[in-house]
Length: 436
Image (spheres, rainbow, N blue to C red):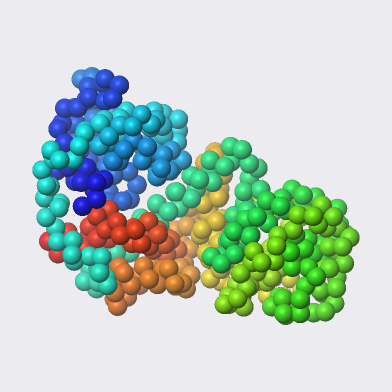
């Protein structure tokens, strides 16, 4: 067993004493150890701790091998950990445990692992999971349990992404963050890094100022010219022009716009070699994705701007996915597909909107965004979600898991399956509890 799971199992089983002292000298008594979350947020929920014999605190307990694990795992940026009232560590290294809301969390150093008896939890046959599939029987007999577990893991991924965005809101303008998130989503896996660089080299404020000073009929050419020029694609090769379904006249217009309006970015363009174009599906080629970004910019107005336009899709009667697809198309060139739109809404727009709503206290935005999160369908499986679904359910169908479940599969694969953290996996725990 890995070290942290030993500590968690020891806490869960009662091997850790009920009477403890924090590193700063507070005495405490564990009244209730709480429910083990198995990787869904803080390690133990609904705990009751009595401090100094007089102050009873209800909340969560988080467990790490060393105190710095709190910050290493990003809990200081995650509002989900604002309920933590005690940090249990195997070794206190002097690091501070401060929550997202600014409160300091008491730390208890319980010392080396050796004194703890092997808990009942360790007696589970862990060879049953981590192979070809972990919960195929559960997925066949009680698929609802698997879907609900994946949805909760999707909520964890959403909370983590929102917390990271909210931390950036303290120093960055909301529109700039959304612009970066939008380009990141358009870049997908292959071209995320150059897309992020483009968001920084062509700030939203600068491109919007330029576009709003440009006659309406010429804005699309300027938006395309600046983005493709700053990205290092101009002059546009015939192959790249074909990938974007651009006519020779359209290419000439955007190159002329770059020559006329691209002076602020001409000395700081991205090297063409930074973009991955080989073995990329035509729809994922960076040129059509940049053209989609230009179309979205072109669809905004001085009154609304990108920020209000994108947030407005969450309240649009047609739904955010169809709205984003419409915004990304112009002049006969199709916009992004439904699966890319779904992924951008789930991975970028919704986390951003929830972070902004929390940061500004906008309850209406929070409600509209939460409603979309609940009903957003899942995109078609990609290589990662397909791998995670196979790991969870084998050949058993999972049914409609929605965007929450799809995001849960991404969280499962990246944070639990790939690093082989089976002991912390809620799917494995559910499967073993049923089989035990």
